[in-house]
Image 1 (cartoon, rainbow, N blue to C red):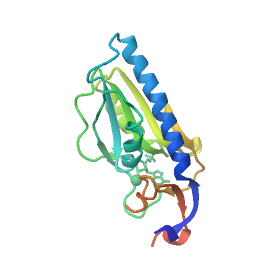
Image 2: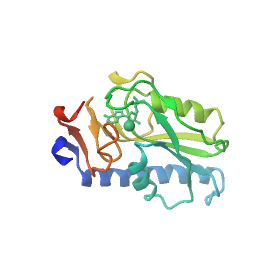
Image 3: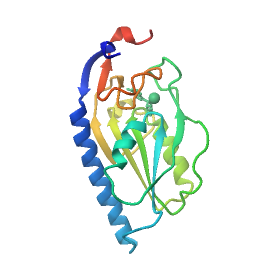
Image 4: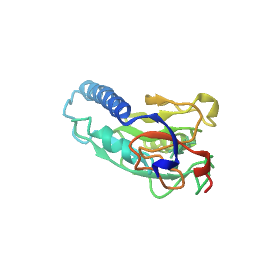
Length: 191
Ligand code: IMP
Ligand code: MG
């Protein structure tokens, strides 16, 4: 598997440091929200919404940087059928959580690419009238690739427009378990 990787873009230690910082920033901003509401212990106020499957690894590390009370509601979106490396548009697969009204919602994804996935989930979440919505992504590709404008409030790394795998990101379902973000060899694509 490692033989399929051309180069490592972001290594394990860099990811760990950045996830730690993102977690700290999120914790502070969410704590401030609760403070403003006059309820610093805010019971059942914070809901993280990871977008499956790519956000799984990132979310697992991210939420362990927060010591406050929070809960998780996963959503599933399909956008890359099989061996495609180009988004074919986002479609909700399954249900959207229904209990987001009045909550502080943090939508988490692995990467902001065309923006269709996060645009869709943000739009659907907003219809429930949450108290606040934050978008947190580990990676962000350059604005030129965006087909839909999305504001990501927390971004781990800005990366070039390359197809990457690892730390939750897949190619045809594989490589999610790599502990780093890497670029695949050309011969590993379409095989
Ligand atoms: P978007 O809808 O085009 O923004 O794409 C978002 C989804 O496509 C992410 O949740 C990823 O699962 C996937 N994706 C986008 N770029 C890459 C990549 O470079 N490698 C692997 N998956 C990607
Ligand atoms: Mg994917």
